[in-house]
Length: 449
Ligand code: SUG
Image (cartoon, rainbow, N blue to C red; front, side, top):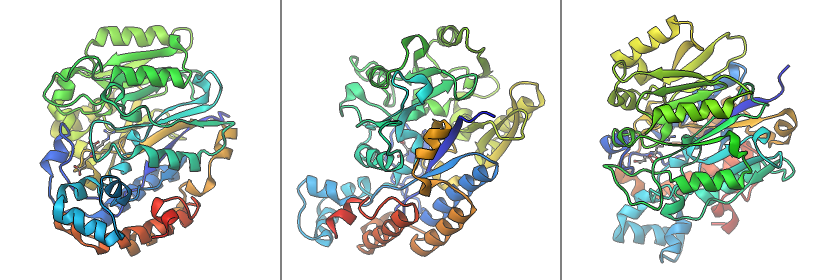
């Protein structure tokens, strides 16, 4: 029996989920700006995905949403008084800040942190670096709360090292596991860590859209996590992919065990990248490269369908891997045809299933964006805060909770509704009990407001 597993930790959608149009280079976010959202619909879609994977026999965890609207930052930039006064002044003077500080963006847990399993680190602990998300102001505030959540869930310092985010400067701009792929023979064995960057921080910005991950952040993470240089590969993401809307590498690439599923135009120098991966894997395993040619699926189709923002899963009882793709991949004629052809072949991917996460997709977040992968051996698994594991009982409880606290609809103007703050806080306060995170988890709980 193989005791080391890969768990998925999904970000629970927060009560202020909305379409802010805040992410340049994320085409869905720009396109859907100011649409009416459904926070309740979004959280229920996410929960259904989590339950389906838990029911399939995978380890599925829940990461709590962050506190929004985020008053501590409003106070930090000079607004003072009672919470209601702070909010009223921000709305009156700087409504744009309200939007930036109300985004539920922590739901995209692939951007929560970079994670290195204990089999790959020099001190034999699982290492986490919360992403500083330096590029976008609405996400650059996530790091400290992410660190706190990870510390509550992975609390044992003998087994887990939860670092602070990297210094917040463009030189170290870091977007977490969305730009990380780990290949291996089995999860418990040392693997090849692939870190993908879009920009050398010593150079200026070049393209149409921002390249969010710097080379220097990847180097820093590899160093602080104690990764073995011989098994760590740093690859440059293709500028053409970023400019087509692949603001993270996981929009054009996903891996599982020894299999890398990627778009022909994902990497700046594909031949060198594949060569380096093969070299790093040598003696341990044979990488299986499943390349999708641009003439079958263009970069534009990859970005609109989110074919690659899928979860590539080894499901107990299934002989070949399952690709859990967004339903939008089925709705695009070319990517649907490609998937049919893919599973008809005798490659490592034997099935494509579709998940409906439309509320998240409209902000550029597919099934893979919503999850953070953490490889855990049995002892590490036992050390995880048990309140966060998904099962039927937790699913039922969270559905009741969401139905009670979340609005069915949220229009942009509703962000200025003073009741939203109290509603969000009531929801999150109850959630800390449900997930056993402690009643001092959120800042509003500690400040007693
Ligand atoms: O960072 N969207 C997120 C989507 C993140 C997707 N994650 C991965 N690819 N792993 C982002 O661009 C949009 C929010 C808004 O516009 O309201 C947003 O932040």
